Image (cartoon, rainbow, N blue to C red; front, top):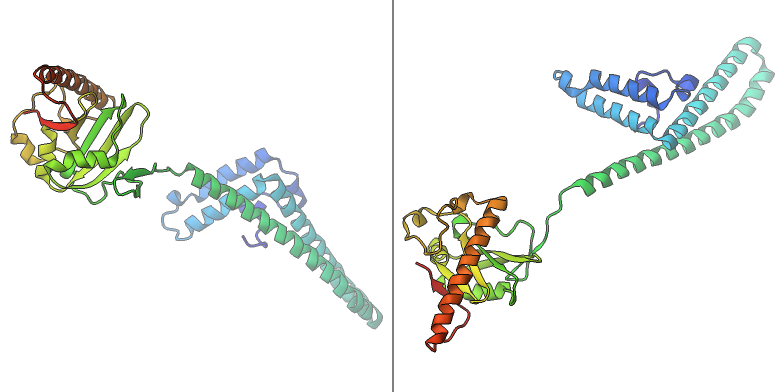
Length: 311
């Protein structure tokens, strides 16, 4: 901000001693009036409209800040004193016109001028520091208000802030969820379970206290379709595997055994409705798996972590 700018004049207010006596309410009122007048939306043909409006806003911020305004008032006072001294010197030069007074003024004027200039530079420097402080304060507020993205851990140990979906065909992405009832699933464990349906390009685990979930990027759409038609994981804590986005091929595939009759399409499940549907499917899936496991164990069969086709 140029030290020569009169912020009172920018807001359409009287400067000098009258400006120093203005209240904060009068300054805010003048700013609102000027803001309506100089707003860029009302000056579409003015190429300097935006710069003038920013200049008005900066002047208001300085006058609104108590410390910055006090420094600015002191700067104006020093300038007024300087002008008064210059006027007196000019008047004496015209009136006296004597060599002696000329020598006296030549002897003393430089000292007074230097002192006034030094004081002016000191106050101007402090004012610039206050302006920098105000700008830094607003910059910190803007950074603190900016949205932050939670980091997620992928199977490769890399950190991701976009859920691992940038540039990925969504028809190859699966949403896998499970309850945190006992054994938890790591990214490597999920990769090993789903690799039997095809290659797994990436696994992104999303942490939660009560429910675990992950996004799994399969190597092909066919592998993703095959995985959604199977039941995976531990019998005591099975995985719910759903497509992130239905592909055209899945529209003609056979209907899985565990489908909610009145549930909406998977591609439209969002928010609380999605979690309610997910909970319902998980409960039915767990019941079916426990019943099936009990029957197999009664026949002497072994039960382990695996994936079972549900169609």
